[in-house]
Image 1: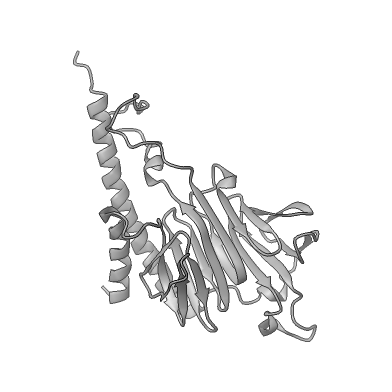
Image 2: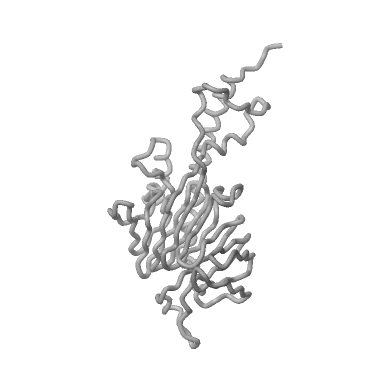
Length: 285
């Protein structure tokens, strides 16, 4: 097993060892090539490497010719293209809450924990995945957060806010910095560009909300401007995919993460079932 992959797995296993810092772990960097930096709320910064953890409250920056792929604990992923600033504003994933939907192995439905039962953890805060695209571009595949309560997921940008509806989407904000896409018609105009590769998104600003579906593209110039829909990919979004030379590596690391997380889920589920049986023993006939 390669060293980067081993460090990636060890990062996920650290979930069971308790938090190493006050902020909640949000994701694992399954790819960090070039210069990728994580900036904490207190202003301290560190260079991200393959397998490093990223936390709620951190801002991730990619330099020129640099890419980052973040694999979030709820199963979502976000790929950052070069010259991007992206912030994990507030992130909380309640892994235990998703276990409550799984039936115990005795075939009976789990009953709510009675008042004063110290065997069950206290109610967790509402899940949320609140992000901000400050500049640059990203491709996002949503995870579990936001699929039931859509307001639990939000991607803010300088021109509008993006909400999800079970989604694989792209977003790029141009602020006089998209000259790399210049062609005969000139550089892309400033503003937010989006594409939907699967599902749909809602893009909302002061002019209202516009829902776009798979195969549709959207442009909005600023917070008060109306969205403009198109069926043609804008040239601001021509280079939004991860370079081909990295794709197999990221896919392999994602699969390894999923295996480790599945093993952890089985362990948590086993503990949950044990607590359920202890709290609700079967009656002998």
